[in-house]
Each structure stands twice: as C-alpha cells, then as structure tokens.
Image 1 (cartoon, rainbow, N blue to C red):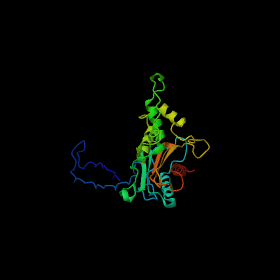
Image 2: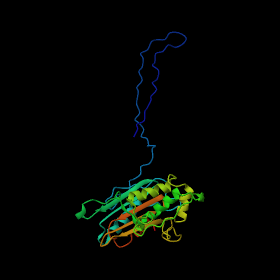
Image 3: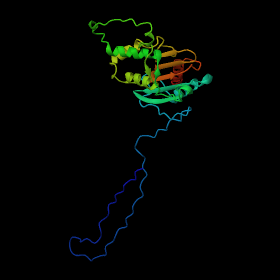
Length: 285
C-alpha cells in the first residue's frame, strides 16, 4: 500500500522588525514541528478476484474467461464442471487407451487435458494429450464445409467446375470422411477463430454455415432441446479387432469450442455425447 506523503508548512520565525520603530530584540522561538502519522488509505486499483478452485481432475486451475457471461443472458459456463464431467465419463467402464481434449474461447485456449497412451507399449510408450494428432474421421466434415465456403464464390456461378467420382478404394480418404490428421487443440482452435473473427470467413458466410448446419449434425441447435445453441459432428474409425478411433468437435454457447479424441473403444457413451453432456452440465442444464 502506498504511504501518504505529508507536507507540513513551517511557521515564520519570531523576531522580525515591526514598522514604526525599533523593538527590543527577543530570542527567536523555534516552533515545535509535529509530523502527523500517515493516514491509511484504501487501494483504488481493481478488486481482487479469488482464483478458481483446483480442477478435481488434478489439472491446473483455470480462470473463467473474461467478458460478459453470455450474449443470450445465460449462466456463465463453468469450465471446471465441463472438464471434470468429461474426465469422469472417459474413465467409466475401464476407461480408454488414450484421449485428449481442448477447450477454446474467442481464439484462446481455456483448458486442455489428456491421459493414457498414443499406442500400446509394444509399439512404443508414448503419452496421449491435447496436441496429439490422429485421423479424425468424419469430424472432417465441418472442416471440409469451412474450406468450401472459403474458396467457392457462390456469387460467381460462371467459374464452373467439374464433379469427379472417386475410385472405390479412395473414397474412405476423401476430405469429408477421413484422411485428415488433427489434434483436439487444432480442431478447437480452428473453430474458435472462425467464430470470434472474420479472419477465416466473412461474418455473413459464417452465419450461413451455422444457421444452415453446413458440416454439422442435422440435430444441432434444435430449439427446446438440450442441443439448443450447440453444433457438433463426430467421427468413428474401425480398423479391426479392438483398433478404433473416435473424435468430436462441438461449438457451444458463449463462444466456446470443445474437441475430444479417443484412440480406442469408447467408455460406454459416444464421444459427442460425452462432450455434449459435459457442456450442458457446465451451463446448468
């Protein structure tokens, strides 16, 4: 706390001449100077905000993002509830081999996590996390829609083009189904930037993408249901035996984007159900 600075004005010393004639000299009187104690002051800076309690999963504490609670008057998203709920579901029924998740808002990372292994130990002991890239299967669909909206000018239909049929052996690797490798961080960051700026898409085109559910599940953003204000798409890959991958990208209210990837069989419910249920719990539903 800054101490107050006290300035004391010193009185004039006695013994000055008086108009009208000489006076009897007197011994100057030196005044007693008393310095008052500093007066405590109240800091004028911003109020102290208590930190968010530690995440029950052991992840580092995460502060709630700045800005208004909602553009729609909703309760602010409780990020620790969101992440704890995902972690709890991912550990049910014996859990999964490896997973990673990432939460973004307004182009910024809010929280990330992951656990387990990228591959079985026989192939190498490598950890799985939010930055681990793998084939995201049909979660590429909103990415493909985004790319088409970015490069195709629908106001200039004369530009033409040609429709090509992919060979049977290559259809599984088309941009709308598979073949693209991304991490949870990549997915969440991409759509967080799309939603918070016009860097990728003009505002009108972005609005059309969400209003028309272009690349999103047809059941997204249904009024009167628990999907209101939520847009998502998942992807599933089955490669024989127990080799599976499952992914999901969800865009929620208040500018949040959440991505989850799993590199094994699911722990009971689908990966998008895990993310969706967690987000609804975080917004008080």
